[in-house]
Length: 557
Image (spheres, one colour):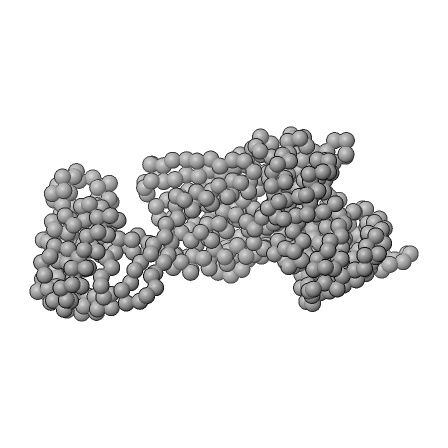
């Protein structure tokens, strides 16, 4: 029976980390039984691994095309694998499946993590040989000693929660349609077989059920991926989304995403795409290409949310919480990272690889679906995506007890400015004149109108008209309809209450935030007492940029 994987992705390390793959050019019982033992012991809770016979290796990577096995040797090798399974104590039986890859026969042994750790194997083949527990170290199988042996002994009968039997459910709570959709998406050969074989055999081959054959029960990972309502069996196993309309935290709406966890993940990512992420295309006159960036890069959001789904504890009755604010997105899951990763390590700007993993099976299925990457790649992926988008550095937080994990992704600070900024015809020339004006005027002096007009006179009439028209269109469509009126009002310094009264508005904080703060942030208006924003005599006036902008759109020139 086929395995629930895509064989091409497997061989090329696209769905499984290289440390979990062992390539053998030919049949070598001694080495293979050691690797079977190491994968069964699964000291890092990675989910076991795969032994691929018929493909040579070079420094842990496959040498392709495969050398292959002769067709007549396949049955013999499968029989010998069974005898090797009895050499392990406790006995351990991998799943075996022959494949044809690039017109060559190969044999794949799927060796999932065992339920009865630690396992031991004979050091050499033959009677009376000594036994030892083997573990994976990089892409090699070694004997566990000292600290590694103690770690392995601590894992005795300890099974990660996602790989445990769920006593609340029965096998009929798993949905054949969801299972087949998964197999079809990952392009597993098991998809076609699933249409003919008994449902019980399908679930056993996918390792999503366990127990005696007369009383098989779903594993938690099976319910999370292949049950229509996993929250019935695993409380609060959903994603909560809170959308804040402003920075006060009082005006918000909530959404709940339920169902199979990979469906939840994709639904929230689709929400991000359709309702949160905005692209800015900034046309620049002095170069052919436009500047493009986003308020939040999708790659960072995808990796951060996928990590939360992968690494949260489904044993705890706490959902993943996503808070969307105007200036940031917060993704909170429980508990925190597995030791030795702690708050200090999270602050380091480098790849982090944990020694142990909480959800070995969930991670495998997410990788098969290409919803998350290999171990230790999440933080670099997020940081690189934010950097390439010119966004602020992401923040990863936990507490000393590692009770939570929080990811903070901040909006691109240029996003708001660029969206409302005026695309002057010659940005290089504008920058030069603004700098020269800034050097001539002291911090306390109001910009001299004659100097402003001098700047405008250096532009030809056509360029000024184009810039003015562009400015009006963008200000009215992207900022608010009172921006130009405010620039007119503050031709002389005015207090906030005077400005708002002139606009027919009450002197409230919400009106200041909506109408004055955007112009202040853009540098079009400025405070007369900037070092004391709340001073009782505080007033607002046009800045140099605001003066130029106002003259452009009002046709003074």
